[in-house]
Length: 161
Image (cartoon, rainbow, N blue to C red):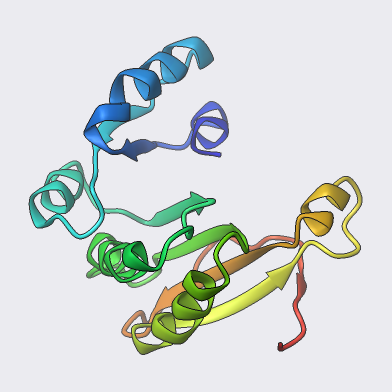
């Protein structure tokens, strides 16, 4: 997703754990983008500060990032820190329910800090596989944000579960 956004002309910083950076850098070079690559361990204040030092973060995107309960709170803390001070920043997460307990914990904890909107891929042409895999989109907007995200996707709201 990040490489696609970079190819569309967005200024992108792709993050992963330190051990994965060589592979990530290789992917950036193969894609021919100008995306930056930086280490980011969720919940690590020095990693978050290093990413934030590159400039304001308007948008955080993540795919398949909720897979174990022990990572949910550090993930949410990191998203909050990255978007801190942004009046129109938000986060979009594409999730597949790999660990039901981790997924439930995310849905329980996220509203403490974020306004949470859940969207479904149901009925969208070309995204039938996402439906079959029970993927969903979550939009997290920091509660202190006063503006609105400029990003809007043509997806239908998911029914409350």
